[in-house]
Image (cartoon, rainbow, N blue to C red; front, side, top):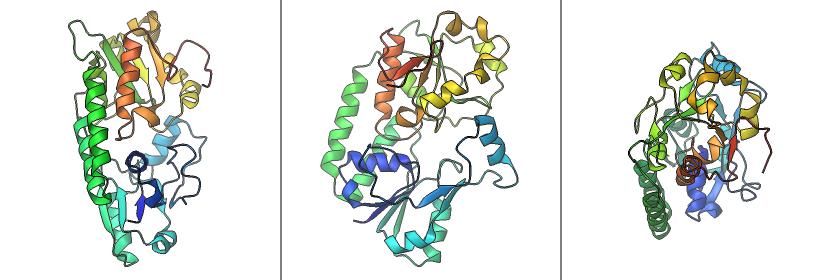
Length: 301
């Protein structure tokens, strides 16, 4: 099986299934597992400079150059050279990866006999179903079963919804403000919190920062899509400069946290279980080294 992954979450899934040896191509953003992807060529590039702020990225995506289309470009020549049997992509977010429709068009254009699979998970259950679907195509069903059993065991060990659960606002984009949607509300609920604004499976849309004062969350978790924790710290002023920020219960109580969004929250792969555990540790007052308190200086770990 010759596989090209056009989605970082798909690369995560392939790796967890033990099928990295079948991976011939990946995106330029695929970064996990560390050290295992160095020899696998990137078949995508992005037109956006790395140094852009979240506001500048949003403006570039919504401007005339993109009009909401993907900011990824596909290397058709390399794709034709690799001649994969299976391409993994998505159609959930047009600005997160090369879309299913564009990939199908490319496959037809270069006349490849390739199956294109779109990963459309919106919930944690959907993510595990996606793992099963990829496993069925790669002959790794046994490993998929182990991943599901492990995920269900770990989730069942979390507090889950309890009376008086603290309200949690998860921020997946800073400027404009976008709350965590899809599987993130489930992560919050499993962790023992009460998600703000969105329910399980809901798609996130921009919100005015003024809603945060109205919500008065007990905990704020910042995990912008595609941002490292260090980069999130660089943009904390987007939040801290908002009217009423200092009066929020989360700010008064020192419960504003920065997490690694791409690793544990933004991507529909099995590591969202780790994300739920990270949130549970925060809410229990025992945060581990995968969470940083926003009121303190950033220290890489």
